[in-house]
Amino acid sequence: MAKPKVNKWKQNAITVAGGNGTGQKINQLNCPAGIFIDQKKNIFIADLDNHRIVEWKYNAKEGQIIAARDGKRNRMNELSYPTDVIVDQQNHSIIIADKGNRRVIRWLNQNQQILIDNIDCSRLAMDKHECLYVSDYKKNEVRRWKMGEYDNEGVVVAGGNGKGDQLNQLNSPRFIFVDEDQSVYVTDRDNHRVMKWRKDAREGIVVAGGNGKGGHQDQFSEPTGMIVDHFGKIYVADQGNHRVMRWCEGKKEVEVVVGGNGEGNQSNQLNRPTGLCFDDEGNLYVTDHFNHRIQKFEIIFITVQIKCEICENTSDDGPCSTDNKIGHKWKQHAITVAGGNGKGQKLNQFNGPTAIFIDQKKNIFIADVHNHRIVEWEHDAKKGQIVAGGNGKGDRIDQLDRPTDVIIDRRNHSIIIADRDNRRVIQWMNEKQKILIHNIDCSRLAIDKHGFLYVNDYMNNEVRRWKMGEYNNEGVVVAGGHGKGDQLNQLHYPTFIFVDEEQSVYVTDRDNRRVMKWRKDAREGIVVAGGNGEGGNLDQLSLPAGLIVDDLGQVYVVDFDHNRVMRWREGKEKGEIVVGGNGEGDQSNQLNGASGLFFDDEENLYVVDDGNDRVQKFEIIL
Image (cartoon, rainbow, N blue to C red; front, side, top):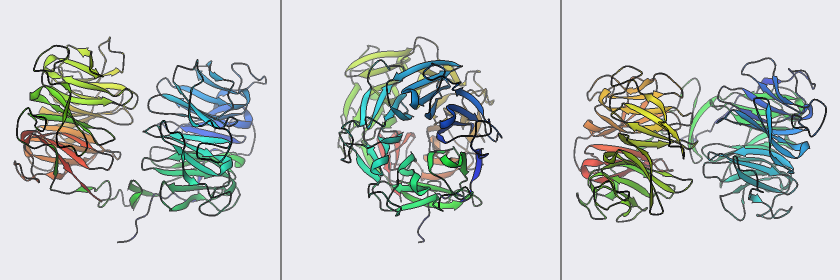
């Protein structure tokens, strides 16, 4: 088999902002630093030596100033050498590292608010929990603040042990990136390396560079801009070598992805690159600092990777069809990882399990419906433990009545349950219970990266969203809500829900035999799977149930009546069977009324085999 390739970009870039010489005109930049690209591909640029933030709309020929300096320093509405900018997409405010004024400042509708002052800030980052991270290049540390709570010194999450090259030290930290696990990546500029600090770690690990200053493949010269993709690959602007490098943590493979053709201003050259950003199509944007421009390197290989295992196709070919995430395959004979010991109430048994949640340790949380309990089955355990309910069927605060879904709020490690027949959503935390939402015919739940809770109401044929912690309202309808029906603005007995990175809501519209996708703020949905009546053909579903969508937008759905799991690509007329489809039964390649679905972080597929009172693990074939 040929060695697979990874993402590649055209080596001759397009200038998408600036590039008209150094200056103050609105089509010019002067030593740009950090950039931020929103979902509309608008570029926000920290125009360092012009002391301003410029928004360059998609395909525009010039920018517009959205924050600037008019001549005086330190005034609230003045900037001095801003080095970074991020957009808080919750409220559309702009947060700026105002380096010369030693402060972090927020701009919202021309109003300014100093968030953090007396800090030698260089770069900013925000995580999915809305925590703000700031690098302090003089104290050689990175600190974290909870958004809205700035009346404290923050928490040191990297460095903070003085200038140095030990694993608990930094030397002039610059760009920062925070991943889904709140691990902090830092370009440790004057140590010519990139460090990764796991959450609550006392020291970091070197994940790129660290072999002294130089121009060899395994070296950096003053690394600056940095971003980490979903597969753990680290992209670094190697400023002194005028190139962008890609590293894979724990691997020796290092490569130049763009630049590396010497200092210059040609389309295949860079001059001390700083900021990096990807758009949602995988195009790579580079702040070309001393060429006073932003360069866009268009992607030419659409690739799929699993923790640095990869494959490719060209953009002309379309996405990969086999041996990659689009064509992932799983062993057809599953392993039983929970239950499978007959129907019952023992700790190694279930009675009608329906939905699961799997945490990062591969512990499985199971809604054991007819036992009126939530069971946690630790990784490789032979039996579970009751973590909620288990006190008989009832409506007391410590009881459940046919719980149909469970999710874990990883921020506070609480368990949130759809307590269906009690018509409530309830939270369990440290043996304490709290009703979050009541008088709702709930059956399924989801939570997005912004901390919003989504609940389906199968009687009102709708899905509603609540901001976590704010339940004293009716929530916002995000799907359905127009009565029972089969129109694009209607649902008919919605069950499982999934919310993607853009807050699009996917719903298994059970009695319409389809899966619907509702984009954020849309008035109606689109059919992304099924919708061709009830049946067993590859373009049909019969009582669709469990649902999950992968990073590439592929929809995995349980076809309940046909005892199979289907995969659909949005825009395709037919799906394909990924597991099951071998008739109803209890063999390792069969299912019996399956319901919930889940992937672990290795892409193994877990299926709740309801009628067989077990959870099945289908291992991925790499």
